[in-house]
Image (tube, rainbow, N blue to C red; front, top):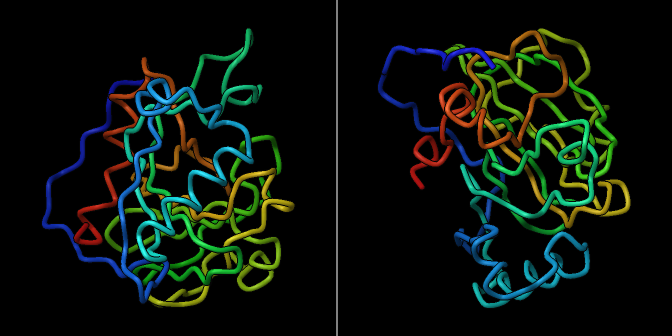
Length: 221
């Protein structure tokens, strides 16, 4: 892995939320530390779905969010993230917003369409849209419904802030993930199209934390 990128500090713009909620937002902890204490097999769809549903009910229906720089066990059993041929990747690089399937997802700021792709591997993003913003950042929206890929398809298309990008996908089209949006900010796409690592190995964490800043301050969270 290359040395950590260096970016000039600047005042953070305040982005719009990619998902709106009349019931507010509640942070959730999905770290491996939490589940090592409880012993829950959170990488199993039914277990994770139950954890999310219970937390949303306790929060009065609020959208759950969190996960930046969070070490997780959610990727166990997927060759994309662990196994003899790859470094174990369990450090999460974006924010997840957990809500119902079909929840609309919107552009957080003025942008153009960078790329999109259906990353349909176990534990992957599945339908993914990436925008490029004038401030030099890219925003990635993962775990969308497949219908989302038909709304905007031409790279360079102007996408004003608040534009509908799609909807959170159902587990059946989302490689068994409970419905949620993975949102990530990226400085340098490193030549990638329609995809960018959303989870990294601990040894690569300094580089990725520099290249993928914490989205929470951009939303005032």
